[in-house]
Amino acid sequence: MICKHLKLNKIKDFGEQKLYFCQNCHIIISRLQKTPIATTKKYEDYYEEEKGGRFGFGLEIIIRLFRFNRAYNIKKIKPQAKSILDIGCGRGFILYYLKKYLGFTTTVGTQISRPAAEFARKKLALNIHQADLLDIDFGEQKFDLITMLHVLEHVPNPEEYVEKIYKLLNKDGIFLVEVPNFNAWSRKITDQYWLSLDPEYHIIFFNYQNISRLLKKYNFHIKKINTFSFEYSIFTSTQSLASKISKSDQLVYKFLQNKKFKISLIPHLILFIILIPFSLLINILLYNSLRGEVLRIVAKK
Ligand SMILES: [Zn+2]
Image 1 (cartoon, rainbow, N blue to C red):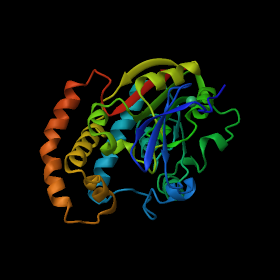
Image 2 (cartoon, rainbow, N blue to C red):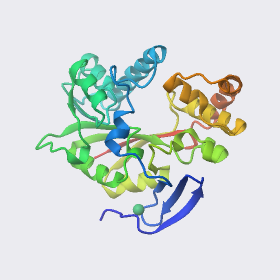
Image 3 (cartoon, rainbow, N blue to C red):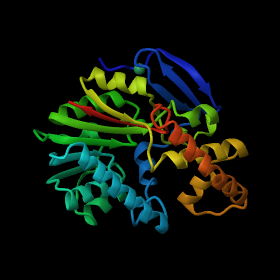
Image 4 (cartoon, protein in one colour):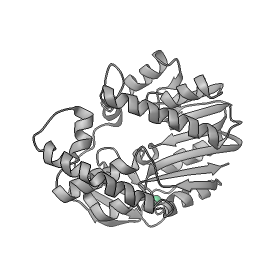
């Protein structure tokens, strides 16, 4: 039976955003005071119109290197895998690299944002469903690997996704899921300044306990867990600490997204740079502690 989250305890009150703990399934749910923007509109705006990108040019190159690194690491998880479904596939670079360089013959993505889906189809020639996973009929099609990277925290009903993903996997298929880690050391220190709270977009929060519980409920076997991400950890910890200390918004992150310069960015940026080595050190020291910024779980059918 899928949890309807009927028994909720309020655990955090940040004014606009409140967090609740479900006594039944143990997930943490975020609710906003104001009426949320409709989902489709929200994700249309998530990616830039023409390029379907989210950041400027210099950062684009770094992002593509990160995507290639991800594709390579995905290949290593199951070297014999030939088919993959990437749920919420961004602009499709991971799928593109897996197909072009890493021996995958079937690469399918889902993406609800139209600009990003069109980029993946037209520029990368990928097979993309521009729809929510739950609304797609795959017929008899199954996959060796399914990935869902920084997507499960965006949906109000993660359990329905996990249930469908299990059915879409071949025997011994692998599900790779990555979400922000609510038990991250920086979240405990910075509270409402934690970057991954992302009130506009993140609806559900996970820690090792509640996500393991969810995966096990649908008969997955957890093979591996890691909480450090080169791509996310240092930036998230540093930005969260800088915001907490200066009691300000996520200014570096916002600047990287919209390029709008504000004078208040200068002292914030200096603080940010000073904090980088500190964040790096803590993340390295806590490498094996399950206190890192992300939860990356490899689960087997
Ligand atoms: Zn629940």
